[in-house]
Image 1 (tube, rainbow, N blue to C red):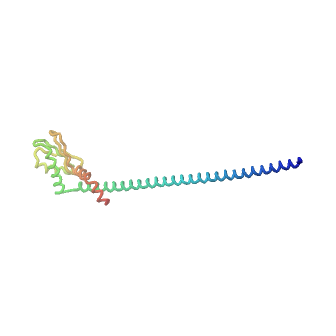
Image 2 (image 1 turned 120 degrees about the horizontal axis):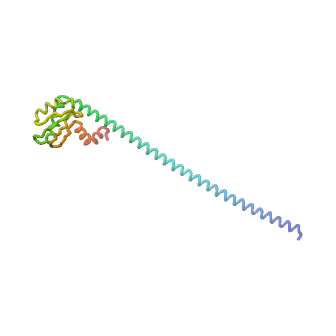
Image 3 (image 1 turned 45 degrees about the vertical axis):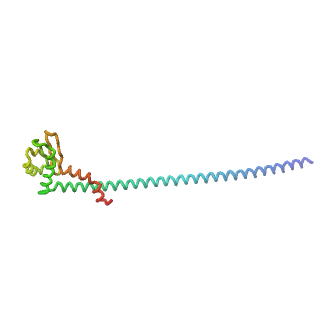
Length: 193
């Protein structure tokens, strides 16, 4: 075997070996590239899923927020309507006149008298414009005297030093009791729930 032949065999073997290494390198590079593409696709899919979840969560938060805001506005509107109704009732009570005002004042005073003992000096307060009315009613009661003005829509506040008792039978207090006791029914009627 000549030296040239040996050199040629070595070269061919080196070329074959180099070709085999290149082929293995290309295969490995394709595998790595394919794995990288798969990883990238998975990362993109995960990111898209995360974005979708965030979008859905944000949408739910905004929807919930909008519903809460709408509910608060409805409640505010209802509260405003109830306030207007209450003020309207107060105006009606304040403007009562004549026999109706006298009858109600008389009934409220009579209801208060049961709380006091005979012989007690009893002071009666009322709306300034009702002074004459209250004094005329008090002519029928011994030991009862008009004592002055009380800021109210009408009715009376009756008290006695002896029994240390005060009875608030004003239109305001009666309205407050009736309003509180019937607020749900009033609301239901106004808003047809």
